[in-house]
Image (tube, rainbow, N blue to C red; front, side, top):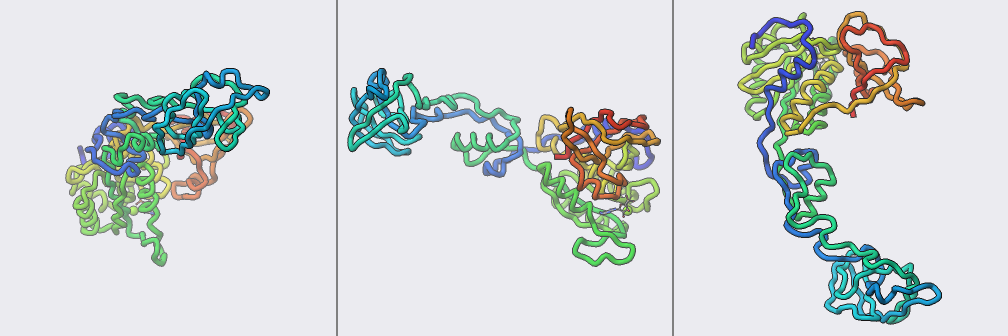
Length: 410
Ligand code: AMP
Ligand code: MG
C-alpha cells in the first residue's frame, strides 16, 4: 500500500471491500453460555437425549385412562378412584389401573397406564375420588417424550448467531459452556491537541474527547471488546506510545479518530505512515469523507475522521462490518426500510450523503424527518436519529414525499 495520495471518489462499497478483505473470523474459545449471547457458535450441538425425556403432564389435573372417561359428561360424570398424588419432579411406580386416577402437577411424568390428563377445571373431587365431567381425545394435555427435541438430532448448527432462545436450547442440552468465535479486541484511540478527558475542565480552545466513548460504545454494541487508549496529542512520541500500548494489549483492530483529513496537521499521518502501512482515502460520502486504512505491526488500523458524527458514521460503515466479520457473522447488512421524506433535500456536491433521520409511522408506511442541522460535528443530529437516510451519489435534489432508503441504527 502507498502511504499517501487521495483517491477522489472511492465508493463506500469499494472501500468496504478493501477493508473487509483484511479480516477473518477469529479463533473459537469456550465460554459460559451467558457470555455466548450474540456470538457465533463454533460447534454443532447434537441432542444426546430426548427432551422432554418422558411423557409428562401439560396441566395440573388427573392422569387417567381415556377409555374410562369416553362417555363422561356433566350429567353423567365418570367417577374414578384417586390412588396417588404426584408433584412436578416426582415419579410414581403406582400404575393407573381401570377406574383409577392419579392427581398430577404440570411437568410430572405420566404414570404407567395413564394416557390422558384431565384439567382440575373439568372435574369435581372428594377425599379419594374424582368425577370427570368432560370426555376428550386420548393424549389430551400430555407432552410426549422427545416432542421438543429427539435424541441424535442437530439442534444448533455451527455458525448460528446465538440469541436468548439458543442460549435456552444450550441449557436444555445440559451445556453450561459453549464454543464460540472469540470477540475482537478493538483499541480505541482519539487524537488531537484540543482534546481533554471527559472529567476535565474544558479550557480555552479545548473540547472533550467524545469519539473515544462513542466509538468504544459502538464496539461494545456490535460485540467487540473495547480497549480504551484514551487520547494522544498530535505528538509523534505520544501517538507511537499509545499504538505500542494497543499492540501490547493484542488488539485485533485499531480504531483511531482525527488527523486524517487533507488539511490536517501532518503528524498523525506521518506517524501512521512511518510506523505502519497505511493508505489515506477520500471516500465518496458525507460526512466522513477522509479515512485511513492499513496495518500497523500486522494489526489492521482504521483511521476515522475527527468530527463526532463523521467518526460514528464511518465506524458504522467500516468498523462495524469488520467486527462482525471477525465475530464470524455470515453477513453484516443493515436492516433498512424505505421511507417517504417529510421534507425536500438539496445537496449540490454530488457526494453520497448519510442523513440523520427520525422515523415516523405515516399513513402509508414509514416517514423520515431530518433531525435538524446535519453538520459533521452536530452530535445531537445522531442523538435524535433512528436511522441514516441515504442520498445516492450524483443526486442533488429529493422532493418532499420521495422515497429514500433508511439504514436503521437499532
Ligand atoms: P480532525 O479530523 O482531527 O481534523 O478533527 C475534526 C474535528 O473533529 C475537529 O473540530 C476536532 O476538534 C474534532 N474532534 C477530533 N477528535 C475528536 C474527539 N475525540 N472528540 C470530539 N471531537 C473531536
Ligand atoms: Mg485533529
